[in-house]
Structures are given as structure tokens and as C-alpha cells.
Image (cartoon, rainbow, N blue to C red; front, side, top):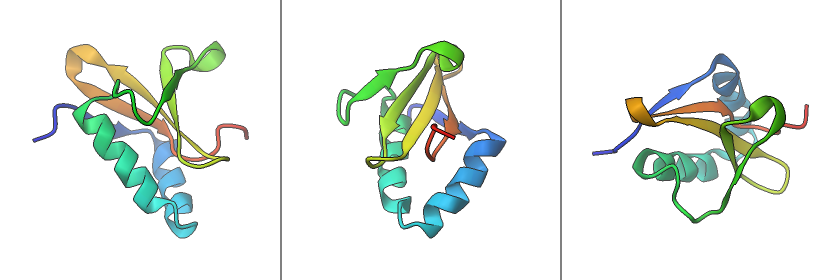
Length: 88
């Protein structure tokens, strides 16, 4: 059983549709499975974000796209904010 619960923002749900149609779904599912087990897993590497996304983390889906998430430690929940490029 997974240690963390995943919740998705409205934007992340929209991103999931785009990602699925562009063939990124397997990679995203792999990352989400890692997040469910341990959002601070060293591999693949993650970045702590700053600025408007301070407190969030980012992992690379591919060269262009990122999975951006927040960890709500007290609730054992990972909030998935984006699953597409965060440069738009």
C-alpha cells in the first residue's frame, strides 16, 4: 500500500489529458508511483522551487515538461500541481 495519497489540482487534471495524448503517460505514472511511496526519493532528482511556487518541488518528465507537486507531510498527501510544462 502506498504511504502518500495523491490529490490533483484542476490544472493537473487538464495537464494529464494533454500528457496522455502526447505519449508521456508511462513516464508520468512512473513518477507518480515514486511520489506515492516517497516524495523525497533521491532518484530521479527533484528540485525545490522558489518564487510563486515556493514550497513545491519539481521532477523532470522530459526535457520540456515537469511534474510539480507539494508535500503535505501532516496529511501524508502529495498535491500534484502541474504535469506539463511550467513555462507557460
